[in-house]
Length: 240
Image (tube, rainbow, N blue to C red; front, side, top):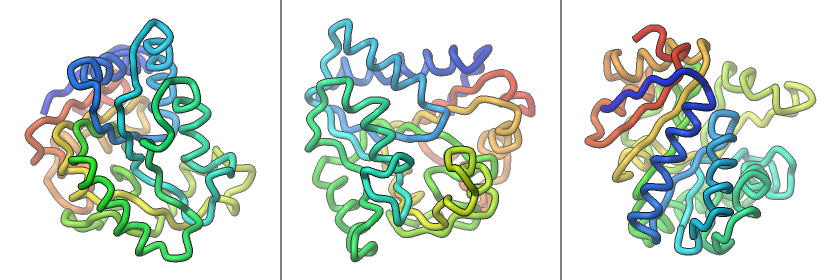
């Protein structure tokens, strides 16, 4: 596990974007696992800038970590919409090669099965980008999620719902379920890059890097992966 401590959010974003663009240059047909939320926002902006300077994303295939159950792809807070607005619509990636679970499927269990199948058919994920929740969740795998979990419907914890309420008008609007890649699915990626910023993530980062490996701290499983880079600002690294 390689831990990179930088000064601030912008430097964190720049470091992660450089790691990603190196992967894309070295393997133009990379399969990338992508994250949403506030942490990767500037990363996507920087990738768009790389594209505007000539980087070619046409060979990429992407799989997002998760989607809220109950939100259509057109909903302004859906993760499909987030990806379109912040990344996909600004680069030359092929829309048919961008995968985000459907939050309004009639058969969520089948959606999960097909998502796993699509990842396997793509050859597996070369590089998985992760954020981390204040309770150390990765994807939407909350504390207690078994390490052998694959893509599934999950119940969001109270703390996660509160953390995500800032993106909605009221906390009552925040979905309580999501479809999420499982921990086993994430761990099957060839390389993992996790980013975090701010003091609210310091305890989670400590647990991920230094803590006991336990499902109660989902990100602690990353200690078992052969190729993980964690990029954090000084505040998030303050307990290391």
